[in-house]
Image (cartoon, rainbow over all chains, first blue to last red; front, side, top):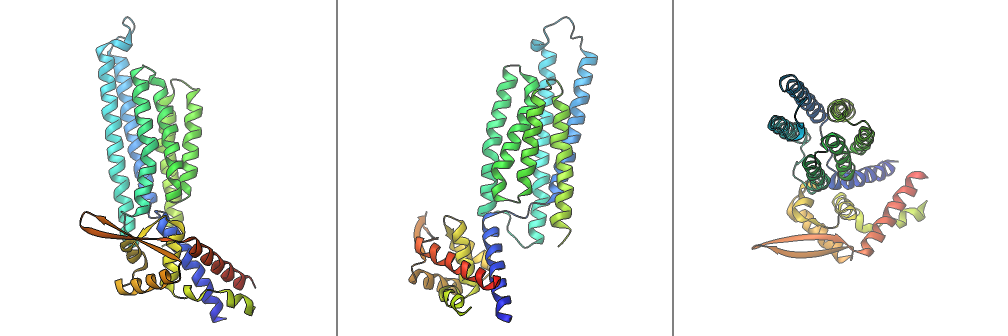
Length: 213
Length: 97
């Protein structure tokens, strides 16, 4: 019977070795929660800026697309978006690195490199796509575009990390597609996709993977 | 029951060898340093297991130069893939019994 236990142990070892060498499993749920909170804060500031703009600037008599105030607003919004992206990435990286350290695993492995490469290909494409939409004044399609490309990026990179990310990606894509049909409500969908979903997913992953050990 | 045990491949009897083969099965190539880190074993220990697997024809070695440093990476041969799958099947059968 002892031998049987050995075989079982062998199979467990094989499985864990296969998984650990291809998947980056140290992704922390706290990273998700942090990213979500940063996204909500960013969306709050953006919402306030937009409101302030319509309050201060009389938009009734100029073609608003070409007024300099309008351009200023968009420069502000772009700065907010980039800050959110950078703070979210740094914070997300911090919590995940902390978890990897706790588990005695390296953060810079073949699996994590592949994870990042596969994440950033659709993400960069999406970024350029959104810039082009802004350029063509299709501002209302930017938020859905971000959600869809972010979702595709998650699905694409999910083979190199925890499987939950795949479902998060599918949810983001769905949300983005729905948002396409509700022109003008982009920010609300953005808040659900980048804020609420990240926090919910982060909490559920935290309880599923982080708390147990 | 005995027939299953004879199907177990002697070449895969150590933990280290199982580990090496598992990693090679799911990655195109794996370099020495990665093997060492993942298996948490000494250079000599891993090298001896690698050469045993290479002798059996289950593993291919590729030496490349990155600058002046050698970078040795390993991949599984078709024969190694077949043998490892058979070994896994035998393990599974043994446990199903």
